[in-house]
Length: 149
Image 1 (tube, rainbow, N blue to C red):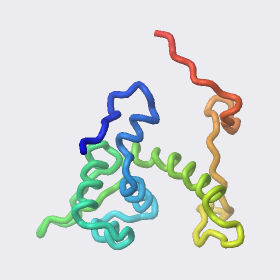
Image 2 (image 1 turned 90 degrees about the vertical axis):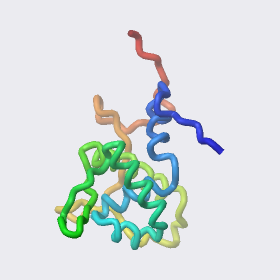
Image 3 (image 1 turned 45 degrees about the vertical axis):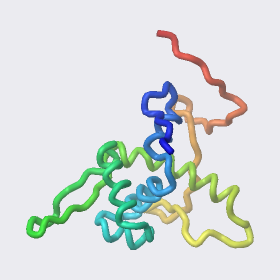
C-alpha cells in the first residue's frame, strides 16, 4: 500500500508528520539527543533491524535533521550528528515526553528516567509556550486563523 505524502501540505503538523510519521524515526532522534552517534549505538539501544535503521538515518540526513560525518578513513566509518534543525526538533520530543509522563504512566510507578537541567540537576517539566508572550499555550485560548497575503 502506498502511503499518503504530506510534504506539500499547507499545514506544519502535516509536514512534520511526513518526516516523522513512523515510530522509528522519532526514536532515532531520541537516541541522537541521548548521545548516540554511531550506527551500532543506535542499533544496540533501539533493537531495530539494520535495514530499518539505515532507512531512517538516510531519511534524517536527507531532511537535514542529522549530518553524516566520516570519523575513520580506512575502512570508511561515519557517525551521525545533530544539525541545527535536528536540535530544534527536541522541543517536539519534549512536548511528547510531557504528555507521555502526564497521561501514559501510572503515578504509583515513577519513570525510570527524568529530564534534568544539566547545571543544577533540577527536574524539568517541559511545556509549550508562546514565543511572543512567554505564556503557556492552552488550546482553549487559541484559534486557527489563515494568514493574509
